[in-house]
Amino acid sequence: MTINGQKCKVVFRKGKPLTKIVLLITIILCTVALIVIYNSITTQQNRLAASRQQAISEEREKQEIQEDIDQLGSHESVIDIAGEHLGLYDPDTIIVEKAE
Image (tube, rainbow, N blue to C red; front, side, top):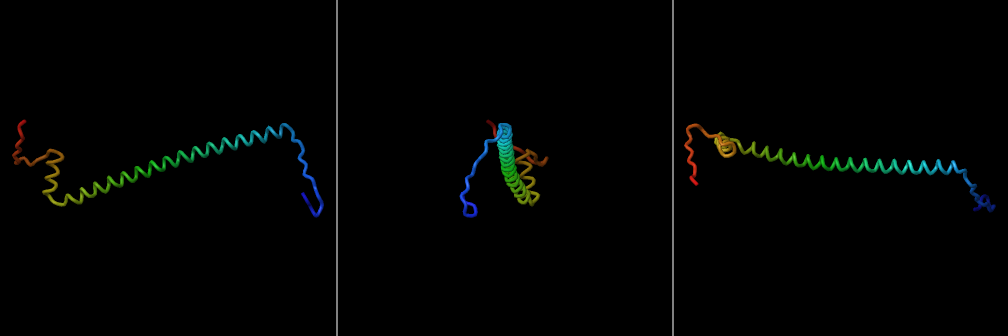
């Protein structure tokens, strides 16, 4: 290495064992902290993805319900739906069942 035109030699002094231990513990703790943070981020990303899927599903269901509401429109369509889906009929209606 050269400084101001003069050759210099870099010499590393041997560190004290306690300094090495403290440095090693610090590195280990930082590594563990990074792993915990990474796992937390991954968990939150998975929750976010699941929430988005649920929101999409609920939006589709909302659209289907809105389409059903829009199709109702008339009194006759309400009567048809009540008969087909709920088994509700006008009291004056004659129901003929097919014999098996």
